[in-house]
Image (cartoon, rainbow, N blue to C red):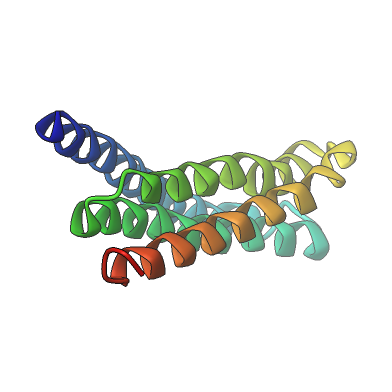
Length: 139
């Protein structure tokens, strides 16, 4: 039984780490695209929104990687959940900013703060589970 839990933690953690790495790579490409191709195409406020999306994409790609690594170190599959919160935030927060900037879908504006709250929830969960994992058993 314990072996299955350890294997599940490893599989889940590796998935979150791998997805986080892909998201980071796409973030680099998105940033380069914004810096070189969009500079002359977008109005300054929309370029700023796009830039914010790329920055937060990178921050939270690293958060996903950190969640997966933490799950492996602390043998706690619940840390992987923080990585999935980051993934949801990437879709909601960054996706809404990209949609507003590139497609002029202004109706996505109210979704952005929901993505921000999802990011915050991921960081708080990561902190809570990491702190809990550092505590001696029984305390």
